Length: 614
Image (cartoon, helix red, strand yellow):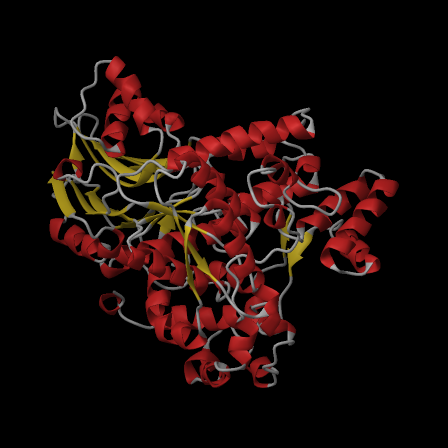
């Protein structure tokens, strides 16, 4: 895990070395173990290194091929680098380091951009191909690692974080208003190439970008599979295949020359990772877990964390985030996130990463992605019931609705009503805290992805590519990198992603149970008290209690400030009469926090001159 930055003069003039040095310095938190810079004619690269594999000086970047034809800077890991290195050695390639970066370099020399399909990992890289005079940039399949770029006149700029680009003073740092609306109305981050900044783009997941001459072209090299028919597997056969893939995904992500630990929320996903990792390590290596726990009954998961620790014998570390800590850390948190964030749960993850680094564990496995692949959120049950209704399966619909009602503790009529609403295209409707004129400038946005045979799978595909997951990956990358920690996500191994989308809804939901294939796969591996849990919490915080209790005066000071009142995004009058009570829908559903978070982002990145952002 590292930070990269670079520039290319599209007119063939000399690269702006000093500019790239400035862009790279602000990424020091992403790579405290080394820095390097390289230039060749029109191109300049800068790199900050977090040394995870081959920590010797030989693994430093930028890395140049033996013949000087190629130079690369990378961020992330290619987990199957050992297998690829053996294959490339058989083809005559010679290696002098133990890094995955050198493997990427040789793989490109051997196969060109086709090498991307061979990589199992999370990565973003930039490679200068001197013989072809072209810059090749690539991002992993689901976008775990970031890559931002901008064109400023004759200069093409890129970096791991938007701040590097903003500091140049060459790009438009004004808010992209469509992104602001998308965040306020639905809690999503910008989709596609868009970012929160008007002048900055992001390389889309599963895409590569080639800059040749003055031509800048994106190409898609991977896409989420679409199936008109699902694999005809029994429950046990699907679980067996899933278990094999999952175990191998964890095994690959344990490869490291530094200690590897795990995030542990006490939920099924993180517990599956911890239990599998502990079994693979067999007690030879002490595995450390890191958890955020709270005493509030509705989000208390400490007993599940302790159960997993007892079951596996791991060394458990916990932290209890407090409001006063959030208030103190907010300036740093906002600066590192570079974007408004949906809830204060981001702070719980922030504290976990801080604890891991303080403990001396710079690599963490985490359960991100399982909910979006396997229908883990309660709302997916509504899509499932809607599919049964559309298929005319009334008997099964009623049975499943009763099971979901029992699992949620909701009345049956309410569950059926929610499913009925799902039969119409979902839209983001303006909320009363959003300025009506601003909201009216964007038509109601339908969330109706196509290409899938049922609404549930279509919704999962949307959340993986455009909805929940891109934002969650952004939060995790920034939280982990703020403390120079590498976060690895076994559930987003591309083989698991492709297999999950080849399975039909019955392997994900049924009988009031979510993530069925994972639960079956983990039988005998994860403690039963965790494996059979039906509640869904994650790294939640007592947000409503914080904002209406110890943070009440702080909230009032924000929403009554001249800056907030003058923004074109907020309905200032609605905030004046807003009851700051835990049960208020706008508080409970995090809309108040979204507005405050947006305001803090605007103050940190938009109201200040570029030089003052870092």
